[in-house]
Image (cartoon, rainbow, N blue to C red):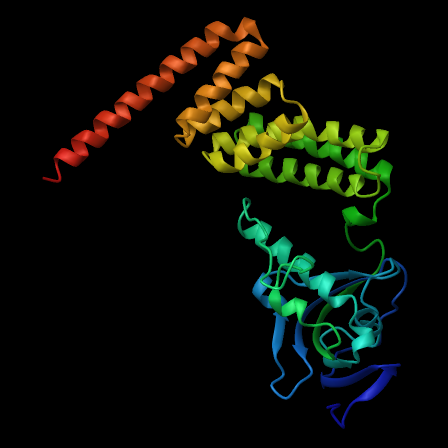
Length: 322
């Protein structure tokens, strides 16, 4: 089904220019960054649409010289000028990395839309990506429609986190935590959330290089604890209690007797009316740290008062319905 107008740009990759770009062909060297939107189709009679990056709001960023997993994209973009739209018809062997890439992009988009999003298993079995349409791409020829928006050379843009060295990432975490703390003190909760989240994400990238439960991996996991606690406090201030509880569960799984973790999770449970769980966390806090017993007693009294007030309000509301 190869379009007769296309020409080869490499074995198994055929290009069809839809709209020519402007200016000379950029120099694509190590750390050159290309920004583009894309659509992915199955190369069949229906030309079935698989992905459209415009639905994810942000264009895709490709950084050259870092062993990108999809050879057809890197070779294809290298042949393009800014402003150009081209179709790339690829044989199955040139599409092998696309399923993994698409899953990653879809999962990232889900998390951005909903902090508590959980990627569900696909209907296609235990080995699935979580997306039935991606599970069926094995052995398929694909068409990539690419709109090249811009090309930037090294030094013309801020360095991406994933291209940083481990030492650079560690320094960035310290910087982001400090920024988050300052924003929190100023009650700029959205900005604080962004800084803490970016710091946590940076540590997660560092952890990917380490063997689970190794000494270095454990150091990185321990570094996450204060950041997760701070992030959770921001969520409590924003009354996003479910998100706070999710992250505090992570803290308390690693450190079951963490005082701040128990205090904040008890507070978050109370905030979203998980009364049983709130009482359990307050009781556990008093058990772990007996010096907190007077505080816990006061918090439990406040919780019981809130419960009674809510029950009275509910009864009054119910009575007014009849």
